[in-house]
Structures are given as C-alpha cells and as structure tokens.
Amino acid sequence: MENLRRDESAFFGKKHQQTEYTSALTLLEESHHQVMQLMEPFSNNELFQKGAVSWSGGTTLGSYFISTTSSHYDWAIKKLKKHQKSVTYTS
Image (cartoon, rainbow, N blue to C red; front, side):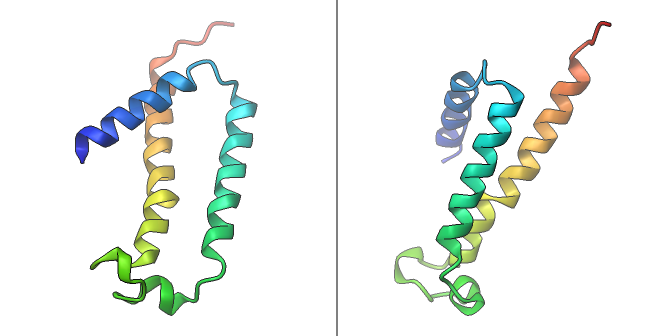
C-alpha cells in the first residue's frame, strides 16, 4: 500500500510540476467542494458508526473522508513549508 501511495504522489507531483499557484488553488477548491458534496447526504451516525456501510469493513466512512481531506491537507502543508524553506528568493 505504501508503494502505491508513493507512486501516486510521484505521478501527481510530475503532473503538476508546472501548475501555477492560482490554478492549483482553484483545483484544490474544486476538489474539496466535490468531496464535501459526496459527504453531505450522510448523517454523523452514518459517517462514524462502524458497520454503517458494509463495503468499508471495520473502517468508518468518515475515516475515508478524513483521509482524503484534512489528512492530505496537513501532509501537503508540511510539504509546501519544507519546499518554501528550500527555495532561495532573489529580489
């Protein structure tokens, strides 16, 4: 699973190497909105009660949404901060 994540991250990084900041922000906002629309019909009970959806095994549906939103956002922010520190700006 870790190799799959690494491959996906490498693909994403290569795909968006030349993406401008404003375009990246727009893509993030659109993606976030799509995920929120997918989540909206579910109650808190459906999102966070184990077994509420049969296909998730022992994982709650809410865990999937957290993984695809806030956890990824935290990861991305850390990567951006690390990159920002490594870039030398000239005036």
